[in-house]
Image (cartoon, rainbow, N blue to C red; front, side, top):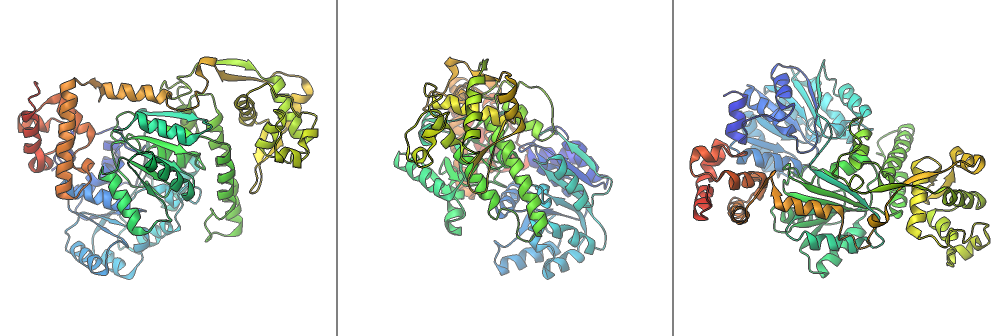
Length: 622
């Protein structure tokens, strides 16, 4: 078989996606290869297809057990022998898998980096033909990356011990210029073919919402998306427990995931979500890497992550099937304080020396600042993210809340001067809440204790709504006039630009949403809701008739039935996108079914007749 036959027979596709063929050819030519492709772009095929054409074994270095299980499960389901070697196996299971690997049973073996230099695995590798080492989630090798794992540094130690150097492939979805350079350097890639397809996920809708009551906004969103699968990310375990508990009490079918749960409960809850037994999971950032669930229609963040890399990776778990999905971040100023605490307290790896840890902490502070600015900007949200990763294009995407909001330029000079004056006159000692409360003339314990009711700017903005004061404050941070810094307590500081505004009498102009676009407060009528409606009306780019939508639900039911029989997640049988294509093609024969995207020979032999029967039984005219 050649690469095209493998693509169709095992994976069910007729053509390669952008850059896949270039990367595959590079590996088959024996050249080190580095692919930077967004989540859902098909990175895994770039090393899986060459692995099936090589004589020897391909080792895939993978950081998480869940990622390995998902990938190996998908391969086995497609008729490809694959195995994983990690701590989830009992000693007996590990020995058996290694024994079968020695016999040449598996062309592809997934292995945790910690296993590479163990005596048993090294003995196997030294007596086997290793043709390729594929490093998945390659950003984990860089200490400047958001998921640095010291165990990844063992990869080159392992490769140096092999009798013959294999081809090295590295793949990642999120990497800044610094991280890319680190990957090439640390993995010692030799004259690599480097292909970056771009970071854009055009099917994802992005929105930032500043809701006074975030829980009510999330509840309203779930009410409007009852039949959809999604993830709700929270910053802390306590927040996960609170949000999940309230949603259950309000009648929603949800589950939870965080590091404080037992291994058994985490596994059960994750499986309930993956197998579509529970549509929504509330989780910390401990959940998600390696989860290839294709029908996640929304990712909500109840709190701002600590950097753009983490946010884009988590948001990118939506819409992996290429269909429309929504990524909504519910922001609060307290998120900055929480994340500053994480940065200052033990987030840098303790195996690093003091100097390196301090450098990483400083970079984490800068990343947090850029993440915060994402929540403030009135420019295109997609463009902001892409620019962060060094990709420059259009400043209008038409699929984010900022692009779909009408803005007007507003003179906020007097408000800006009041904010700057209040910060300066109070000695730059307080956080945003104290400054805002002072300006609006609040009579709180904090204001009285700090004698801010005696500040010359006390009550200066008492006629202005709090959200408008905060928006000007956000704008001043975004434009570098104010900084929010501090160790454990966020303090507003002045910059040189702030002094210039007070001194030269210049104007401060900012973009503000027109009155009709200001927040409604309940979060139920977000721009994303319009996108949801359009998604339901027009799936896979073609409008489905009422009968076709009914057929789609019947096919989903059949898929769930098969998934339960085989104890696999439904999306491993067929993705939603494949089922939608079946509704459009309405195949009646094997040949017609094989024309459906995602249906290959192997899967047709396993499931094809049952799906043809379902289509025939529901009598939808072709």
